Image 1 (cartoon, helix red, strand yellow):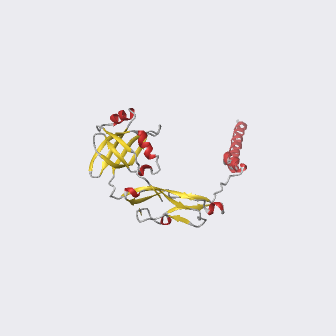
Image 2: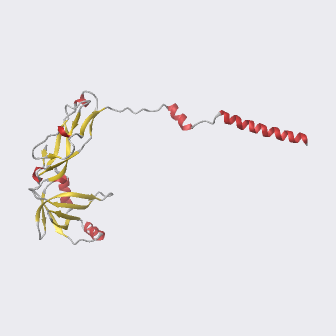
Image 3: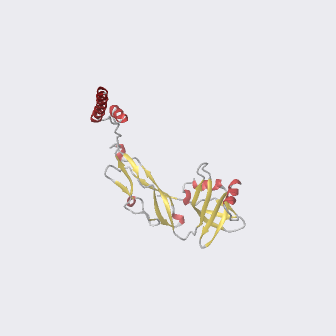
Length: 236
């Protein structure tokens, strides 16, 4: 279990006047991100952040679970973490951030990524494929004890054996909230794709042929019509 370290840097924030979407667009046009700070029993506070500093936190080892110092110009200074963020779908730039004030003596519920370590025996010796079913678990712990990730050794994983949440590393500081019986990883077989023969593909593309009975019926009808015409001519 890799422990997350508290970010040593300080995230600077400037207060902003809450407004509509046009006001938020103006903030982004100026190269900043609109954000909201809330939690700890205090009123929510609209702020402005530097997207470069936010991206540095999100891309750090502990990612969005990082605890950092938020310093508001001319105002409060508090421990905080990023709890939600939005990206612009086309350009991929940050659009909005939600920050939460953090009390270091109060437990939090966070999602922690699972990192698989080692080469599974089922892959190396049996020719299977390692499939990771669960990629993160929800845990509860103090902010200073939030793991950056939870490592799981899969070297002994073979066919018929399943790695579950109960098999992950457990400590007294971190409580798992995810169901302990959930599958984290297992070994699967390589599925072969069945390819249809060229003749079968050609027959399917041509579609069903018209039944012979129908053809014969059409022919008899045509012959009957011809006979009636000939008989009428003879009577005349």
